[in-house]
Length: 93
Image (cartoon, rainbow, N blue to C red; front, top):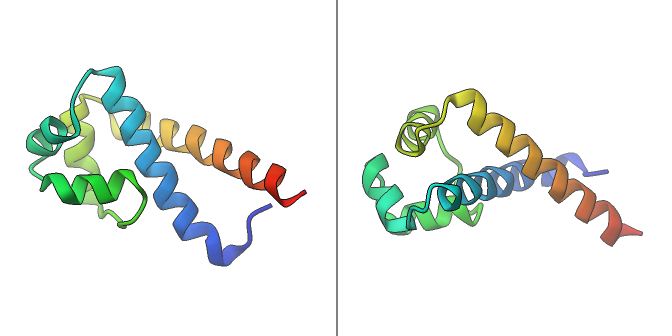
């Protein structure tokens, strides 16, 4: 199980992984997604790597650019979060 101090980093990483999965499913480059969302490409890269926290406005912009609802984005993030948790659990053993 994940300790509370690592939860924010894990959540950022899960969000980034969700964005990458959805972006790849739509055959978009990182640069094109950033452009559609109105976000600098290097900032988008940091989001995808889980290095940056993202506010609601940017989350909505990314979802709109990916043509997914907030709920779909959250569901994908939950899937990625569970994958990361399982990986951490396996590594901790």
